[in-house]
Image (cartoon, rainbow, N blue to C red):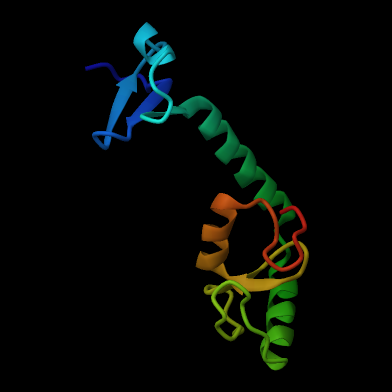
Amino acid sequence: MSSRQPLFVIYDRQYGTYIRLYDSLPERYHMAARDRYTLFDLQQQQERSRSQQERQQQLALPKFVTVLILRDAATNGKLCSITMDPIEIDTDTFTVTPCYHAFNKEALQRWTRDHATCPECNQRL
């Protein structure tokens, strides 16, 4: 078995299986029915996730600012706009975006997988 990582992965929606390809796409996949196959370029996906992690580290607020914003939101009885749960002063469960809005951490992580904006003000994260 080869230890190198595949460059491309194709998902066959008809059979629900992944087809791993290592160097390039075979000719038959270039002309394959687009509704049956989904192509994932792993290198681009890894670069995107790396740049997102770097951007999140740059935009991270200091912990004392996060605590102050969470305390204010909890005192005013604000709700997480994703889960509609009351915000608490718990930095393990709740977080604050760079635009100073408080959310449940897990819900915000799920949100940012599909969206690049804040759920509250639509500012780019």
